Length: 84
Picture 1: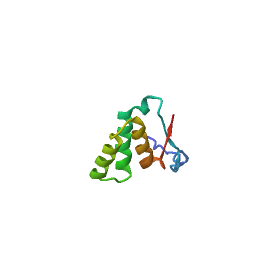
Picture 2: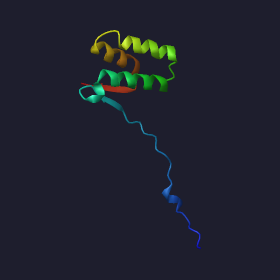
Picture 3: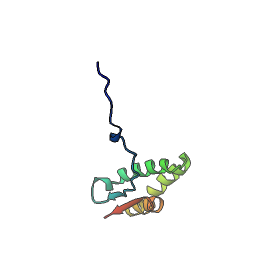
Picture 4: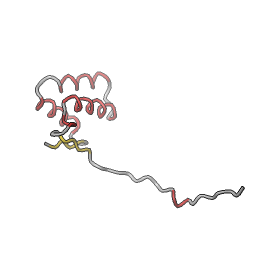
């Protein structure tokens, strides 16, 4: 059986992508429960501890929808773009 040789030109370095995270508040991603889920995930990725996440969830749920998106934006605005 003949040994197969692989062309190394098929392997490339991973490119760093800096694509924006955009959340459309008028679509399904704008649902309050979905935003709460995103907030938990982003907070974990940013190193928030359990107490900080619980506090964030409390702040997001302490008012109306506008409060929820304002608190979300306060914490994740540098990383996520919210569109209306």
